[in-house]
Image 1 (tube, rainbow, N blue to C red):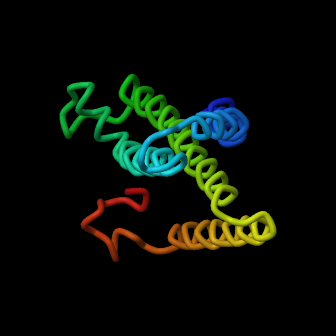
Image 2 (image 1 turned 90 degrees about the vertical axis):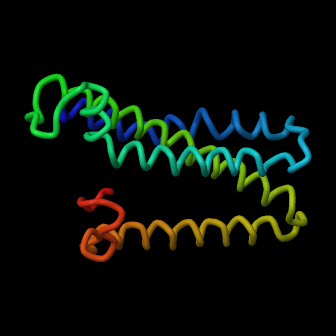
Length: 157
């Protein structure tokens, strides 16, 4: 990928964070369904994250199916370009969905915790997020196909 495209992918997190979280906060404040104000956004963001992760992990295979290419086709030209575009769109989708979950959780904490405990509750939520991030990054060092071969044949799947 070119430097410009890599920068476009990396800017997705900050841009979606600035735009999505306030928007989700406003929408969830006005949500009036029986599940509560925040839970539908948590669920939708979580489902979007799971589906987006799968679509990103299998980007190359999906583009070969959509492109009508055989299993023995060379990975070059339009096929490679389609895969890069698809992966970039899925990265933005993931950032959108993750920010949706984070916004709903932060608002849920403010709704549920008494005023004198909101600071501690937000601190614990940040700690748990940090621990989850560290664990996720540590999985990058494991030979995941060796331990979880049923998920796929590459580290990313």
